[in-house]
Length: 258
Length: 158
Image 1: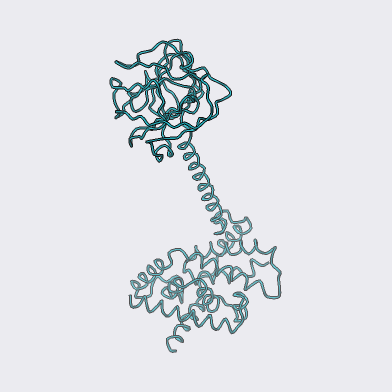
Image 2: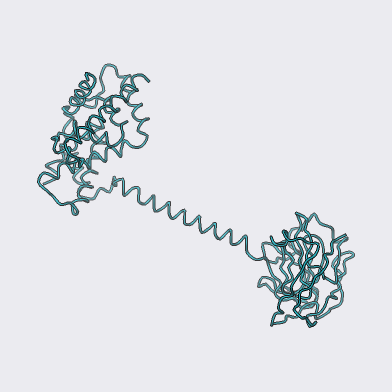
């Protein structure tokens, strides 16, 4: 109780203290600030509000950037829209296959357009020459950095002219090659989550509906074979796009690289 | 005019709490600015403006002491111990240790004790400023005094 009284006494003493009175100048300065709306020292709420708005704007921008990045990462890979003449693809795992309209091209794929050929990838028209797919866009391979893969070299490229394999089990560092028999536009040369998860010993594949707009491809034009490497020869002798189809489900046996 | 009628009292109140004349100038100006901003929505009653003005000032003081309150209070107390002779006080009758301990309290306790003992307000005006009755004010004052005593003992022991 005595402590409390003592404390109250100290408070009352402080309350009775007489700090120096405001001088005329300081009083005038305070009045000017009040009348002018206080540009020098804004009220705390006014100081906090812009910070809150800034933080909200920054969070929104970060969210948008994140969405864009995720969308870009999940974007479809480059797709071969048109392949005329002899166009071959050197896949990242080292194999070489003829290009077909509708092919999805993984980064690192080399597109080889023979003289007289033409291809359109990701809205870019490619004339004769070699191109590499990078970030979903074809770039001139002659000026591009050397493409390195840990797959087999072109000298040991496995050429698979009949292309009847539906699914192959991929190595962790190589893409899955999924080729639908007789279906050009749905042929996929890039990995997907479903391909990795799907058992690959026997695969049932339903032949999708043929696209109404049949695109001229290397297979239909059947050009002369072209050498793309020391021993690589592409023989585009797969079934033509005019082959009859019944839309039935077919079962094929997986063919692995030996 | 409202400003000239109350500015000295408000400034003295703020100066007692802060011990700093320049800071008291700033907080006094902010108090009146906020009061002006709130006036259009205020329904004035008899003698209601003065408690309202001091409540704004007490709120501004609490906001000022809110950030890093404990550290600031300890720094004040250390400075006070070094000044054993009692020199360098902000003004006659200043009690820096008590000011520092007040700043270490929660905002409600700060407001109760500041308005009750340092603001030249009557008990009725303090109750009006806090929006409580007199009996409730007595309870709040008792708790705030206990908290203040604890802070002072803690600083003395620590």
